[in-house]
Amino acid sequence: MNLCIQYLKYKGNTIMATIKNELTGRASGKVGLQIYRITNGKTALCALPASFNVSQSEKSLEVRARFSLGLKLAHAMCDIPHLKHVWKNTSITAGDSKRTAFNKMMKANYPFVLKDGLDAILPIVPDLGFIAEKSAATLANDEITADINAIGTLQEIDPAVETSFQLACVVFCTSPTDNRWAPYRFISCASAPIALNLATPLSISITLAGSKTTTFDMYSVHRAFFTLLTLNAEGVPIHFSDTFTV
Image (tube, rainbow, N blue to C red; front, side, top):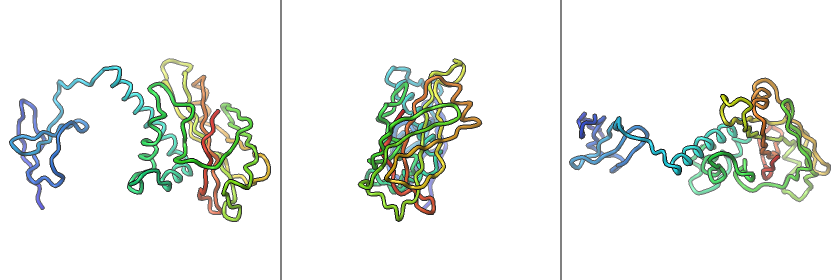
């Protein structure tokens, strides 16, 4: 089926294309830097007028700030391969099978993204998980540590299948020590796997080095969001804990 395209003028603006055989139905409104218009019964795709002004209202600025922060958060979460795997393979709503892990993160986390920060109860996992109770935790520029109470045998974890734990962590860094730096950055990190043990407390550390240490030192305020993952013998994530924070 052929799509016929014509170049036209519309009120002084160059029209990029008119759609005569409309495979996807009528369209109207702004999409990115283009505008769909219906002209003489035909759908036209036009360039955005040069005089178009982006709204500077308080509400618009807030929406853009939240969206930008949400994008960076999702990128940081995707930088942890096992965390990305969990999101990709967990269904939250109908139609999730067609969504990427990144899109699921954006949709699920947006309510917890503020215009100037993140909610303290932001979940970095896609659903409720098993309970991992933090007894202590420390954040430093070279190491992150978390002490976790014994998980116990009532959390639906199968030691015959799940052979190790891994701690995943996203650190939200704010209050730059130099005002020329970005107002916030993220550090994505994860521990090496440790043997699964449900009966005794866990002490897990994550080493920071290189650019992650540099990023940590560039900011004076740090909030960490953790989840504890279980892995099988092949290193594939099976279960995850609820998010806990420092």
